[in-house]
Image 1 (cartoon, rainbow, N blue to C red):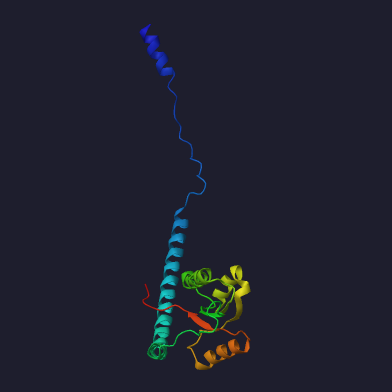
Image 2 (cartoon, rainbow, N blue to C red; image 1 turned 45 degrees about the vertical axis):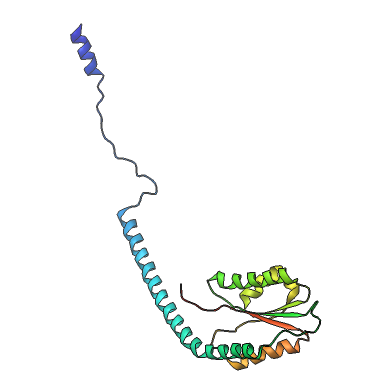
Length: 197
């Protein structure tokens, strides 16, 4: 009896014959991995060259900005020494003009949106009835068109691609004068460079 039981156990043993495993879908082969590594290295090279180009552009912009800052500081000192105050004409509801210095393009959205936020905060505080906005740069203009299209007096583009020139400033000033908008108070909103970080 024990012998038969033992034989029965041996009869039930199945023979395992390994067959070829089916290939798993989306499993990377050695060739795929080497291609991927090569593309990653190419992307790293492109990124490195882009960093070098942007560093060169930044250096040039900084060199061009340095001599222009003297004029800005001089103008600010003049206003402080003379103690110029806003016009007394109709203090209850003076006409305000806001000039926003932005740019036409750029990947740093905070530069443009922070300017527009500051102007919107001023409009919310003082009221937007007697305020007109002049936008220098397409980025700010696009943001103002969404919410304050009625306040937008005019906009300028293609400014700031090259070093600033006095003739550009006089052109903008003349266009504002020729617009016919009589303002009692003018304000300018712009970014002030502190560091690359």
